[in-house]
Image (cartoon, rainbow, N blue to C red; front, side, top):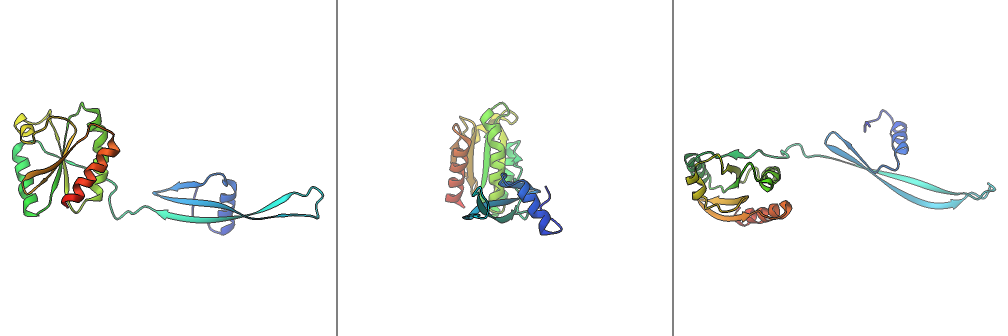
Length: 186
């Protein structure tokens, strides 16, 4: 359905035809139609005494904030040298980084990754998010992270690991724990 109408009668007709539908989605935004009933009155001129109800429609439109990305893709770390470079650049910027230690076969890791990418969009200017696939990197890198369970999300600051969340439970709980961890160090 097109939200923009050349005149109000067309918009009213569209709303009237779909009065049971309360939410319209259109190109990243939504149109909320709140139906409220006004007063009731009885038409005494008619013999069947039907009640008539005055209907009022209030329309509220909201559009998505397109100035910020919805998700930021996490960058892979594939070697110890690359981790050293990332930690050095983060130290120069005095900016912490988040590293998600995961495996391609781990269901919870795969399910958690897009949620972490959405979280990365929230903190886009404050810190960077990276991931390590433990099956594709040398085991010295995995030992350096002191990883025993997956997924493990670590916050590194000033070249050393400051906090971690081991995500063996529901994804929304893990994301909330990671958000709290970030707020404590940013």
